[in-house]
Image (cartoon, rainbow, N blue to C red; front, side, top):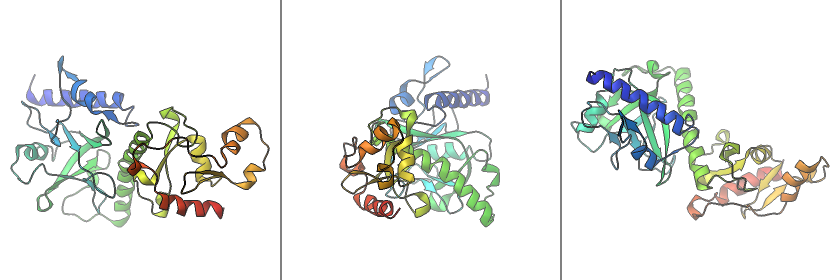
Amino acid sequence: MSSESLDLQLRAEIMEFLRHASNDQEHPIAKSSLLYDFKFNGAPFKIIDHQGGIRKPTGFTRAISLTTYESNEKFGYADGIGPDGFIRYSWQGESFDDYRNKAVRQLIGTDLGVPWFIKVSDREFQPVFPLRVVGEEPENKQFVLAFEDIAPIFQSGSPIETALRAYVTRQTISRVHQRFFRSQVLSAYNDHCAICKLHHRKLLDAAHIIPDSGGGEPSVVNGLSLCKIHHQAFDENMLGITPDYLVKIRKDILDEDDGPMLEHGLKRLHNGKLMYLPSSNKLRPSRDLLSSRYNEFLSA
């Protein structure tokens, strides 16, 4: 088999493994799984590098994965979205000629996909795929990435119309920030609803305390892990949470008589404490953000 065919086969098998392991990007993948569970041609094969961000296996000329280990204050990871809506991924090290940067550069101008992994915790990474490397900005020591379906929009050196830029930005934020936000929040709460302690990931959402539309950031301290019923009740201001983590139910709901779900699912929660919070204080919901949102609840 030619090296080109081997490269294509490897990428196809990695993508299939990732779809299955993440339920098509619905949840993060264990670091140990990315290091030890994948096999290629019958032999163990690491999808990510132990420490470096760019994985360029021996015998291959192109990178097979990109990983972000470091975080930033705003979005929780160092690499991010540029003003044109496309993803920026930093070089490995400072050198243009670093073999790992060369391996990423080899992907520019091809239709080859590459997965990106964002660190959620020491044990888990959120996969984002399939991406293409569509350009490079040497002056900023970074590559430009795009989702496969919007990659053709990118033309290096050409301005993108305002409406098109807004579309690309919305698509990228939805697919990157929101997936990462969900993984980060649910991981912090160990897959429990903060209000009722329900422990079924498929029935949980990552709720924003301050919504996107109100300028809320996709940060874990602006998030709550809530089951779907309590998430909807929170969004509709039927349910509020004080800065002291007390649950409050709106008066008209308390006065309503509508069967056991309302009685046990909402009314009995009134004045009770949140049943589950992250063990780390730095991951717990911001009291300032809760205060702002609670004032909105009181005026509803």
